[in-house]
Length: 335
Figure (cartoon, rainbow, N blue to C red):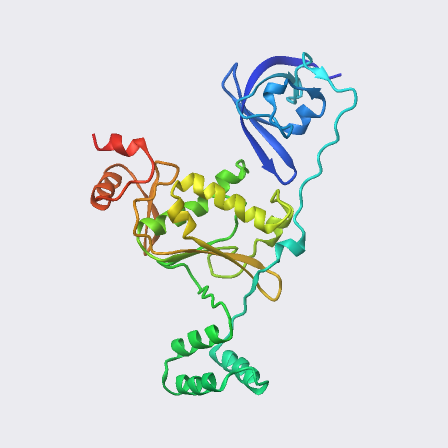
């Protein structure tokens, strides 16, 4: 029989939706310690007061719950709550289907210039190229440089050209994952997405066009994000995942005009490796502050965060008459 160790009150600070169910992150009001517990371990066995629950039956952030901690370290709801006669079943995890994962993605292939001309010739032999276009193509092939030929053929053949390259650059950043980070203790998406949001904000504040490729290793090889989206993302389709990513980006960046200018496209290889390109246009608006107080810029060496005097100097030299996005902290810095 399990031995009761103690009783305590805890405030729910986050209700985190994950692929295998919701997790409650709480703050122990007795000793200030943080902890987590699966939501279903609470709501499946007892009936919590209505004021602690939202309209969908989930525990509200800010709710204060009475807990019991047992000798083995496990946490349960207090016996003061009404116990359910029949426990609720543990909710089945949401899973994304492969069909929805790959819906409307673009095929990525590393085509050489010769490959594109061969594709052009094939379409020409089938009568799919207009005479005027044929004449223009012959002119392009005779006088234009390879890059101009490549761009012309990609446009004509409706191929979305993606240049991954072998390494990162001032305009190109690689991220291997959406949902994995160097800190395995943090699994909430709002935290995991930040590694990508920092890169996006850095491009904006450097006033350069750039691309963040997610699913690409540092050496430029395609690692793919298909497994993590299928196994870990708590969404039934890729569109909902992207909507969640964009919503959290809007909350972190706080500038609708900038966020709405960002373009996200998905690609798959012939081997079904899935990766994402996040295209950031040149931003001429106000300074972008992540989470209201973090300022990132980008140079040839990559992203860096400005702090202290560097932060103040950047704001003074770049703000001008443009609004600084978010924050009372910036006003305080100028005092």
